[in-house]
Image 1 (cartoon, helix red, strand yellow):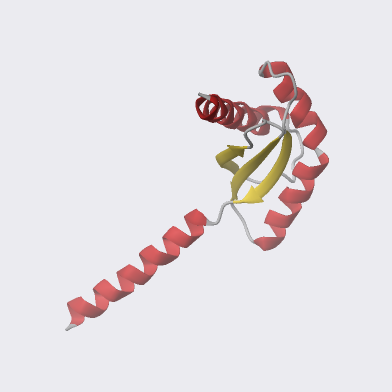
Image 2: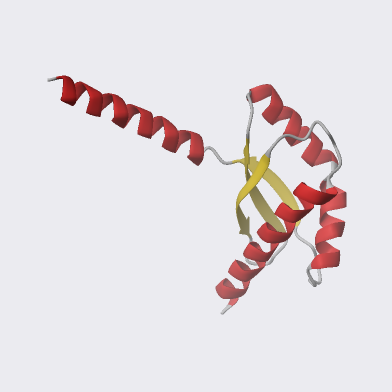
Length: 118
């Protein structure tokens, strides 16, 4: 029963945080960000937010610094939108699964080209 609630809270945080990042965050240095996943602890005290950022490594690091600075604002906005006793602490991490998948796809494409030449 508790796992179901944690999953629902995680999905709601993902939805609301995506909307906050798109509409409420006014920093022009903030690049194109996609929230790919949210993991919430069982006691709802911490939420790991997985992000995909379009750009190179310097843009990714700048985005992470901007998000760390705006952490309090995002938590307060989440508190207004989601009725929880305690709003979880937000920890932002990069999701490398998209890059990893595209790398695997490129490698498979090279293998397929090599087989078709034979």
